[in-house]
Image 1 (cartoon, rainbow, N blue to C red):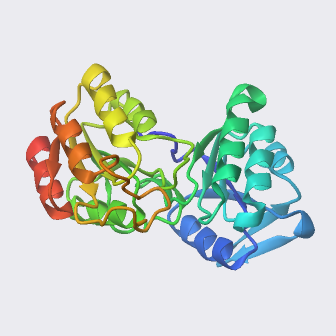
Image 2: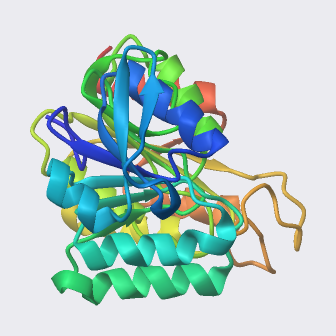
Image 3: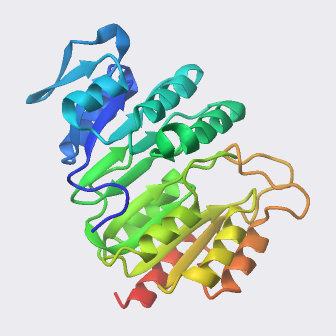
Length: 295
């Protein structure tokens, strides 16, 4: 199985006709993703050719859903228009909106994540913003994660960092993954570590969970509390940012340490206190995961 995304998932791409949308739509199609349409009101009715197939462009998410039965949207819309795009997807009742766009103002992210909780009875799960998306290897790929660096397997991965997602996928490629979810590193995200922990705990094909965090906020501490009460499967972790200077944002908008809050050491200690084995480097984390799963 997989979480959130399977081979049956039908995908729309908001912003498909832009440069990034075109490039990554081609990559998603090559990975076997059922991309059934793009969304661009100015180009509705047209079709875009990707190698051996044409993908229709719809004027709205609702129109695309009605025509194709799509349940997933991947958002490659520029930051200034991303809020409206995500709200449109939520108002249409899309099941999953994967927001790749980075540089979205925090107040916009607050607005669309809050809106999605109530639109259509909270039908829309948001992943992101500022994330690489998610992949269920061998089934479907929604976003920008390279599809050729791993294979289907028994590990579930949830990560704030895109590049660390790729590194752990590669280092653990011999075991493979059920699903890998890049939740994004902005201060406000739609899907949390806890959401993914719950999903992986309930997925019968996931035997081990790898959790990647980073400095800033308290998401990892909250994940540790959840693991203590609700997760029975082994969890291996990594926290990026042990050498980050105080008060300086590191890579992600949410990756900033202020005083004693949000430090890598505090997160590591919280995770280890509930039985999570935490590596000091990505490579050590991969080794711990292999030991835990018997690979």
